[in-house]
Length: 191
Ligand SMILES: CC(C)(COP(=O)(O)OP(=O)(O)OC[C@H]1O[C@@H](n2cnc3c(N)ncnc32)[C@H](O)[C@@H]1OP(=O)(O)O)[C@@H](O)C(=O)NCCC(=O)NCCS
Image (tube, rainbow, N blue to C red; front, side, top):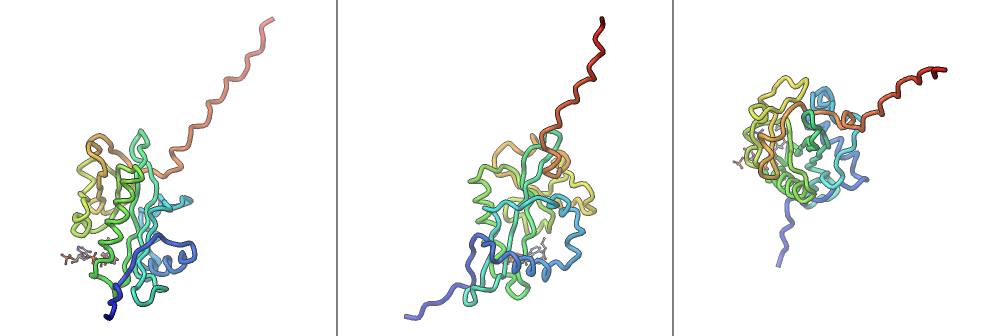
């Protein structure tokens, strides 16, 4: 019996393939990707390791044909922890074969298992709605600097999140513990 090799396999991104993943992102989105508003949240922040997954070509497992990442962000004045999904990229010659779908469902399932309750992204509404994403602006989410707020989308991974959590998306560093208030200068002791 002849075994038919699957067209692709998905797995967590190994460190050794980080360069290949960046090359895929460059091929799919071009160097202008770094100017997107979503990149402001990635500056100096590592992606969530457990949610960085790749797709490898079935018969050439050294070729990366898909990749997805998520970044930790904060939302609103309370600094609610959330995930910013992206980039998701599939090699042009492998589009439409279910690779994006496989990476999305696997990582969203993992994100929920890890306890995350809110995922945001900027992308095509018609693609991401199949994974439970809905336009985020009507729910009060704002990505500062995003020129196409209609492309900002949100997926709740737990009930009761939408409507309760909202506000500006914020870089992780803005949630660092506040500096201790300066002590008032010691008054000269009265004699
Ligand atoms: C968009 C992308 C992530 C989809 O991944 P993929 O592996 O090609 O897609 P899948 O095989 O999982 O899904 C295919 C389905 O998605 C639809 N689809 C693909 N791209 C779409 C888009 N930009 N908008 C709406 N639907 C889209 C296809 O029509 C197909 O629909 P069907 O299941 O009803 O036939 C991938 O093609 C990609 O990286 N494209 C380049 C970047 C890009 O265009 N991004 C735009 C989205 S932010």
